[in-house]
Length: 81
View 1 (tube, rainbow, N blue to C red):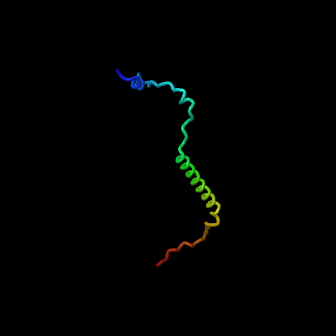
View 2: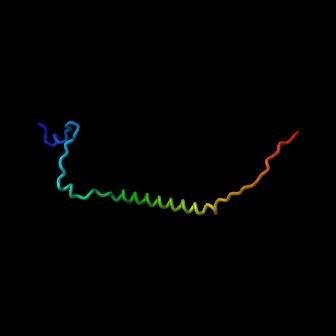
View 3: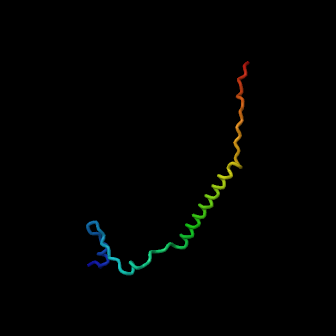
């Protein structure tokens, strides 16, 4: 004869038998994110903010840094021999 635990985990007609939740799991708080994960997310957000600020500063400085000069040049005429 099989133990009761193995019978509960067996599949019957494509449906899994699920034990009803006990009172401890219903009242418990959801798991919290680890401090390492929160720190990593904060570092990523700070890096993205720094990149965004740098991009906006570069966009504002573009006129001072880049200069476009347009010169009219004469095209060379072919020499006749």
